[in-house]
Length: 215
Ligand SMILES: Nc1ncnc2c1ncn2[C@@H]1O[C@H](COP(=O)(O)OP(=O)(O)OP(=O)(O)O)[C@@H](O)[C@H]1O
Ligand SMILES: Nc1nc2c(ncn2[C@@H]2O[C@H](COP(=O)(O)O)[C@@H](O)[C@H]2O)c(=O)[nH]1
Image (cartoon, rainbow, N blue to C red; front, side, top):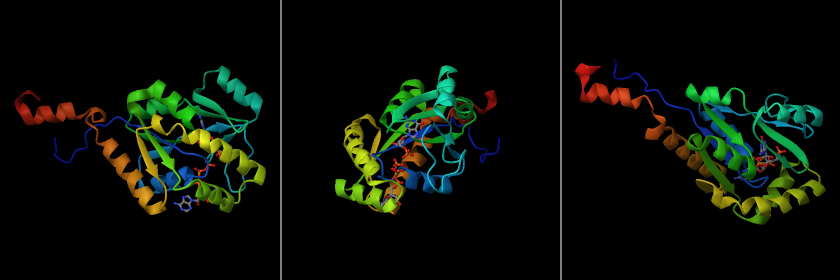
């Protein structure tokens, strides 16, 4: 075996949660640009499409009847109701992808993080993003320009509840400067990929070092 041959690694499920507006989508985009072998888990949702969003890329947009049907078919690894809309993670592909060493990125709320952890514990890495201050969070939601004042009020009310779940995560990162935050999240992902428990091909490799004649 050439010493450059990559060792087999099991994939992981990287969860990014935060109060709405703290920067999950922004950090997720940067991670996807910089890490090949990382793909977004595209959720199914009943919420209206926002300007600029693409069906099948940002979400799979469906009506409530279709969502309920998928739920009945056990098509979701997890699902939750957020701001009166339903969101679910499609089960298909993910378990199979993990076996093949693929990593998946999730932008889900604390309920999604909890359910994914209950179903796929050892494969899950949970990161929670916090804003540097509560008024900065509100400013970011306003400057994003995607929501009405009514929706911003709802998101801010929910933000406090979401923040109260910060201690259900493996890592907590404050998103003050976007580049600094990204560097921290990237470091976590790179280190988690190296975990011994994920590098399942190491057993055979180590055998070639310690008992080369037996291989
Ligand atoms: N560190 C930062 N400094 C300044 N602006 C930021 C920072 N991080 C994100 N933003 C901006 O804040 C707004 C909200 O960010 P983003 O949409 O990524 O949040 P989110 O957590 O995905 O929100 P939601 O849960 O509602 O989808 C965006 O306009 C984004 O460009
Ligand atoms: N439990 C889940 N939560 C999800 C999923 N997809 C998104 N979300 C969360 O919903 C809110 C609102 O998102 P928005 O795009 O409408 O602003 C946000 O907190 C997301 O993290 C999912 O599949 N499951």
